[in-house]
Length: 475
Image 1 (cartoon, rainbow, N blue to C red):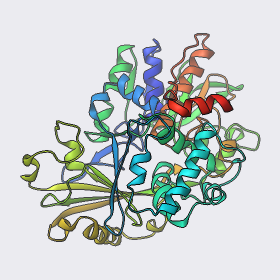
Image 2 (image 1 turned 180 degrees about the vertical axis):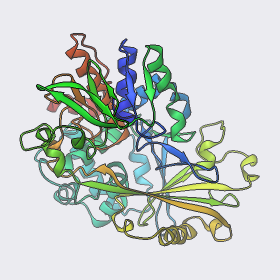
Image 3 (image 1 turned 45 degrees about the vertical axis):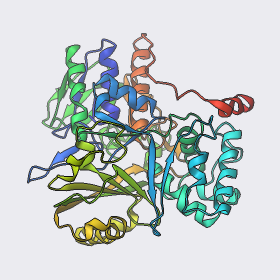
Image 4 (image 1 turned 30 degrees about the vertical axis):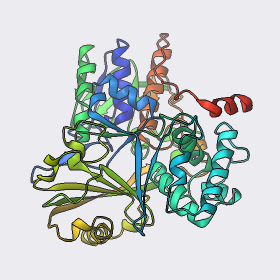
């Protein structure tokens, strides 16, 4: 196993539980890949970006269960929003059957006019009545589909964009319509549990301790700071790997679970040439994510998180609250002890942050602080103790129209060599769920090649209410 990100870990754990002896090579000193945390020189632990899971992410939830991290995920049943006028809204599920369970929240969404809401309902019903697969969406962007559905400018900016830019890490005029529609179908329409938000209550790196233990139970091992320089192929068969220290490692099979731009250099050029299994990777575009970390000398925010409308800042996460031991449902700071905190740590996340990539660290911090002064008035008088900016310039692949044709299968076409990674063909965009799905699919392919087929991939949440009836009618 090459690569200790979510794809590699999920594949390795699945294989280990099936009785396979796994060696996992990771070039970094920690597991997690792009979904990890690290320690600053002053001892502060920071996530490279705030990652969250949703109720519809069934395979990610399964992976967390396998590695004993499920109890470290704090679940919330609502989404908090705020626009530039200071209008706040809470989106949550009601007792109505899907797809109408979110309707009451929509009715009281003050940032939208009646005309905006009618347009949104019309588009959502088009998705639901088609069982999540409206006709004629191949090869068009999400923005083109929204225009076809006669969405108002405010509905696009204040509703569709708020959800989808964060979910897809891409702007609506660059993202394939199918991906955007799938987000709304699986998250908000098909099952009332789909929109639940899960956030780690520990730094990301602390989620993965059970991975090494699962592998070790079957006699395997995790080797950190062990990069692979070359995957050897002889006669269209996997023949071993050469590590960066020039030593060699042999195995019955290999799963390469490295980023899509790091994979071709490890293999013979023919694999990436026209007609090769990785030829499409040269055409994959990437999209950036920027996270801004701010430590204040006093509490400035009560909610655990907040999604913003019409700001550069898209999400604010109250890391101090998220890391606290907590009782109740966790929707807001519930007790006086939080008021006695000496300080507060916030993380801001901005997806598809193309405009921020060329900007300097201090400029980005001041931009975010200026917006926070409008959103969280308490920050005006609070002292900023320290701050940092993390730019993931190539955070995800861009889910552009036609991108699925560029994504390789988990089966490489080379005997005993397999691929895993969110860039492989999973049916999902570049997400934690997509990465785990790829790992499970690769594990299934490995075992099938050994003549021991086994299923790891978890199904989507079951359809409920009228969504179930409509999906059955069009299937």
